[in-house]
Length: 200
Image: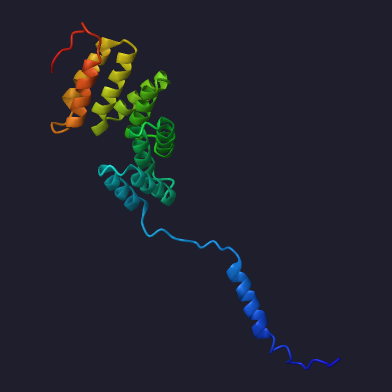
C-alpha cells in the first residue's frame, strides 16, 4: 500500500465536485418566481379581459391578484363578481364573504352577497340583513341595495314595500346609469299584476 501524502486528495477534488454538481442538476428544484405585477395591476388586467369577454383570462388575473394580496377586498370582490356573472354562486358567496370579513363595512360586498342568496333562492333573512346593511351605509351603492331589497320583498309577496323601495332607488339612480335603470324596470315588471306602481 502506498501511503498518501498530505496533499494527495487534490487530484480527486475536481471529480468529486463535478459529481456533486451533476447530481444537484438532476434533483428537482423549486425556483422561487416573483410576480412582477401588483395585485392592483392583475385586477386591472382582469377587468380589461372581462370587458372583452375573455372570462377565463379574467379569472386567471383575479386569482393572481388574490395570490398577490390575500387581504385585499377588491381582489375578492372582482373574483366574486365574475363568479356571480358566470352563475358560480358557491364561489361568489365565498369571495364576497371573504371581502366582508376583511372589510365589514363594505356595502358593495354586503349587497352582492345578498344578491347571491336571492339568485340561489335561500337564506332570505340573511339577504335582508345584508341589503339593509348596504342601504344604511349609503353612498353610490344605496340605489342598488334598495333594488336588491325590493327584489327580496317581491319574492316574499311584500309588493307595496317593494314598490316604495323601487321608487326610492329610481330617485337616487344617477342619470346616466342605464344598467341600473333597466334593472329597476325589470324589478317593477316582476311585481304582481294589479299593484299600483306610482311613477316618480
